[in-house]
Image 1 (cartoon, rainbow, N blue to C red):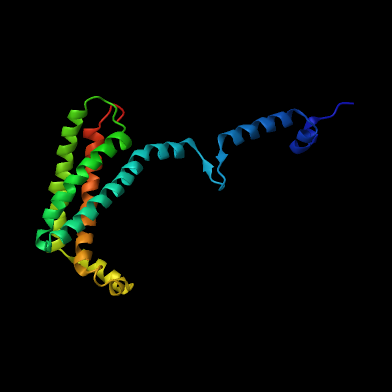
Image 2 (cartoon, rainbow, N blue to C red):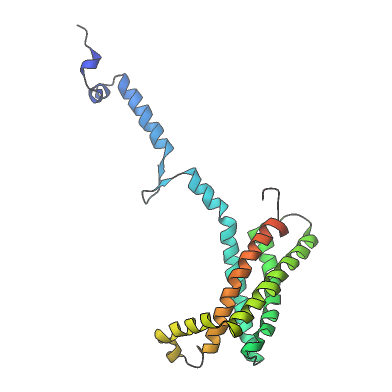
Length: 211
């Protein structure tokens, strides 16, 4: 007695071990292989991994920037206090702290961020000094002076925040309006110079064929 296989639903044919079962299993296996789920339930695709790798250089640059900027800032504020510089002359301290920061920045960016392995170190040093000089002396230093003595609104806004949260009253001898002004000026100028430096380092100083 022959049985018409179309008389039964697909699920019943799969349960019976018919051809539909093999087809369904292979289809489900392919679908499972095409999408891998992370522990959080998100689907991880090669595109996400590619984006993570592509941003590795930028993320390392930010880490180096944080380290380098911290050293630069401590020296900048320390020199303004040691030399008793008024707000009109903070560029002197910025000039000195920026020079120290250049040396640290070259070592970390060349060896870790951009992984330059060529033997043309002297040429890279020349390019690095030139581009960094533009960033530090041509962009960061003038902008620091601008926001410290001419356009002080960012510094006043920062000091208002410190005063509202009670920090300015808790540490009046440390968190002064002058410190807030210099900090805001330094931070804003650093953002502009870091953007310029990253582009200069990537596409000119440590440029590779892959770039």
